Image (cartoon, rainbow, N blue to C red; front, side):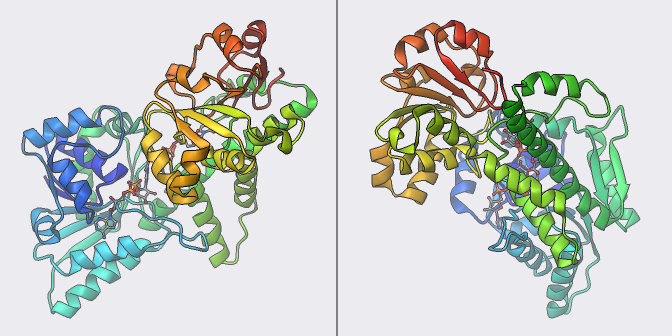
Length: 450
Ligand code: NAD
Ligand code: UGA
């Protein structure tokens, strides 16, 4: 099948590469010239395991094309995916500027029947707006071309995006057009070969399913974070509690990990957007409002622990803090809403020097920090180190922010000799408090007995 993907970011590029890998001819379009010329030159603009070889293989086979030309992209396809960003606007609602601009661009150009697929995360009712935007442009041209709009939200996780796309738990298709549904079934057949994974529903339910899933996952995390803070006061260990809860199949063991709060490009914005959708219909979503409040608070927890450890924020001045990990989760260089950004802001304000190491996110982190704090200030406060060992050199304490694999089994005895303050703050509960203590270090996790 010939497919066009509008928006070549995390979702667009991964979807494009995966659709090409099963034999389709895919054209990925973006308005960002720099991104498209990087891709044409074989450079992948994001860090996503396995993506480089998949893009290279399919580009070489002529099945994966990149373009900035809407004319070329719309003429190419019988199926056009919308995978542009839907960032929060000032009040937290989803900003549909990019989606509707892309829809108008389609309407200005289609000559052949086309199925338009909303893959971006969009509020209920957006498919109607996309349809109206395309129709509006057709009317202006006095053209009559058949098209339909379906909702096919994406559930991939960054860092595991290829695996999630190639072997999805489910494929949600919201459609009110039987022909479009048939086309989607054909397109997704290679991804649900042995078990039927495609779930058909109406368009609005599909749009809501995406927000419901992210909101539920975010709520589980906030619930566990709140419980972890209580466990500390009660002298209980959240890791034992998590294990004991998760074995109940009605609860399940995933997404129960307490930590520094959820980040990333989606949970924070999607929770906000769903709250706004509720408000627009005069319904307060109490649980989600609390989910967001708990999460905002959780991003400060490690800084509060550091203040307590040193006996007040004033005592933090001129301390050197080693930071392991900057990205919002492992296996990605994505810094959007990363909890490290909140911690760094607090550490800079307290007058700390920071020595940070991240396996892949350092340059993206620097870009974001320089934008937010100014290059001069960042240069004064932050040293980006080339290894985990270099980051702890000359540091007072170590803070583990992102649970990259290479941080999982450090030499605690070496850390005890190196860190002046002889303390580890584990923002992801990856260390065994007893093992850390045995090496002569004090340990602070999230909701742990230390
Ligand atoms: P992204 O910011 O990485 O990429 C979006 C791309 O769209 C950018 O490259 C941008 O230049 C391009 N773009 C913007 N306007 C355009 C236009 N008019 N025409 C062509 N290109 C345009 O975003 P993302 O992380 O891939 O997210 C895209 C959507 O998918 C969002 O709605 C997001 O909520 C959803 N989603 C994201 C993930 C994820 O893991 N990142 C997972 C599931 C769903
Ligand atoms: C999330 C969802 O998991 C995907 O299904 C969805 O498609 C995507 O959002 C989206 O809509 O964009 P992602 O943001 O890539 O994927 O990453 P997650 O693995 O979900 O992690 C999100 C945040 O939650 C991270 O900061 C992570 O550290 C945190 N988290 C996750 C916890 O604090 N505890 C957990 O138990 C799990």
